[in-house]
Image 1 (cartoon, rainbow over the protein chains, first blue to last red):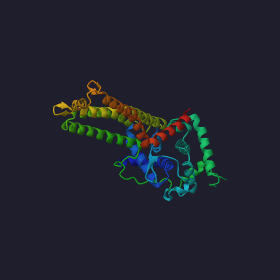
Image 2: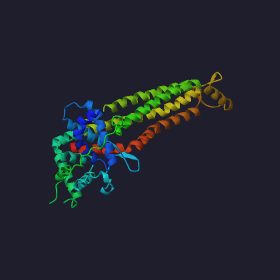
Image 3: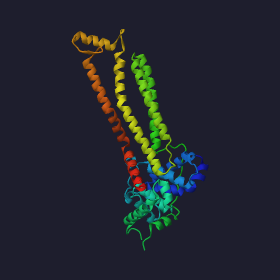
Length: 163
Length: 218
């Protein structure tokens, strides 16, 4: 990958990639693997970008699609498809943010299904229901209901943990 | 007052450590860990290995006097290669930039298609390979006479009443047909079992993801 492409086309959107990769991984090692893989796939797929959408939306799609179909290393060195999150206490220390509330929120998000993680991440990134539906390929009418359900579930998980 | 998740998110990412990108090392030469790329690599390696093996086997079979077996083997494996090369081309066309539903659907359809095609091939592949062994050795030259005919001659000398079908002992025909049936029956099942063992979790997860997305589409 040319460093120019990375600096101009990926780095400005690193926030999107980092946030998504964090939601689908439980360790720093997996997170770094996912981040690098997403960058690699963006670079490899760049010829397919047809400017029918914003570059940022396209980066979201690639990042999400790659995260949804990555095989993640398990601690016993076997490999398996992205699966349920580890409990918070099993999360590696260097993987955590300095903001404890954000750590708790991420741990709660990791307890959701893969699709619910995608929906709530996009919602938190202030994407409209239509944009969320366009990125994940669903009906925008159902997104609002799903977001409310996910928020209720997150509140239940976080209940009493955050002041 | 409890903070909303929107505020936790917003405020959390204002901290300087929240969006630190990992160091990128020789990304261009990095081997992809993505499942589609792994499939591609596995397919390419398998196809190259099959082509190399079938050529080597064809040459060896000629020198050891069973060219018919080598030729049937070669043609069968080449058909397998052509069909799987076409399947591989389909995998190359999967676009990761489309929406998640279309992407997962395309990947799932490709997997289902390749399993269905290779299951069907396995039903025929093992019996054809077995038959190539039988035919190859049957027509192998044994001092001017095909080995099969020589064998039948010896059997008839010992058991003159042996029933024959087109010059082949009936018992031999029955055994071969039985083995062909068993191979055809188990061929596709062995393939399915093998695939499930390696990619069972991928199939299950794809089904779950698609079911979740379909519930959002309805």
